[in-house]
Image 1 (cartoon, rainbow, N blue to C red):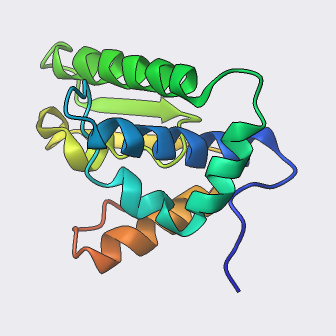
Image 2 (cartoon, rainbow, N blue to C red; image 1 turned 180 degrees about the vertical axis):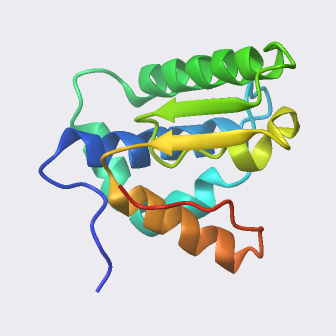
Image 3 (cartoon, rainbow, N blue to C red; image 1 turned 90 degrees about the horizontal axis):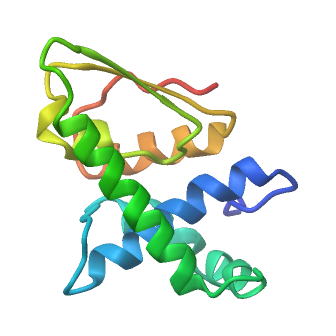
Length: 140
């Protein structure tokens, strides 16, 4: 049986929801961010995520724009950081793929801290299927 990504806790939705919105942004021809892993991380729960987005008080396009802008801003901040900074801690991002997709983080220690152990399980599962070298991801 497929595990649900939407649970009683807000934290479990936000990681999967943000990744799904990054996937939608990545498919746009005028995208401002491209996360090649986002759709693979969320496709199993696509129907559930779309249903939940329909129940929010804001249109999903607004949420998508916010996530795209936030992602682009953080990506650029990491890309333009001082070269002496060799460690990055990502807090509560859930299904974050920056360690895999940003060349500027190669050789850098990237630590992600999150409450959602399902996010870490999904990342490990997808990256293993895609033959992407593991980065030592651990659950919470």
